[in-house]
Length: 189
Ligand SMILES: O=C(O)C[C@@H](Cc1ccccc1)[C@H](O)SCc1ccccc1
Ligand code: NI
Image 1 (cartoon, rainbow, N blue to C red):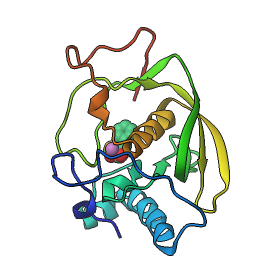
Image 2 (image 1 turned 45 degrees about the horizontal axis):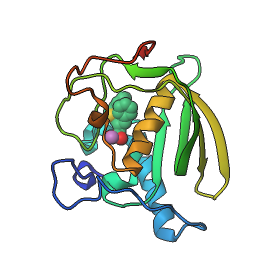
Image 3 (image 1 turned 90 degrees about the vertical axis):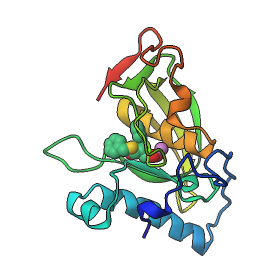
């Protein structure tokens, strides 16, 4: 299983965190299938308070392969339900070779800014992202999916896809005015 010690940090030398990750070919190798399972397992365990404490995991809703120093275009996303009546996750899949094929002009951002499992410090500021996206990706079976996402799931997937391109959330924060956001930005969270 993946532990915090396996997650590379932005202040570490010699990691792939800032590289543009390689596309994944199908069928997946045994190792790639195991990686996909391990990435999703991390999110599941990290979102269980007792287990997260037992294993010392920071909660996560996404985890990309470059964060465990594997430069491949693969990321697990697990956005939990926000409906007390129904615990079906809003979005749960391992997205492979993801491409954003369309995006809203309107931007969205988390009111509290963003964090990252690969960044051990709080960095204040708005991270403007597209509020709505159409995402195309392959799942572990190689099946192609096209999904439309908005608000929080869209933010999470853009955060994870950034990891596959060597981009970190604070790269998007306006250096002169961290709490500046484009006109019409939707804030939530
Ligand atoms: O480092 C990662 O990629 C995982 C991030 C993803 C993320 C951060 C901010 C905004 C969108 C996605 C972690 O999930 S950060 C910790 C976290 C945990 C639960 C809910 C929100 C953020
Ligand atoms: Ni991150």
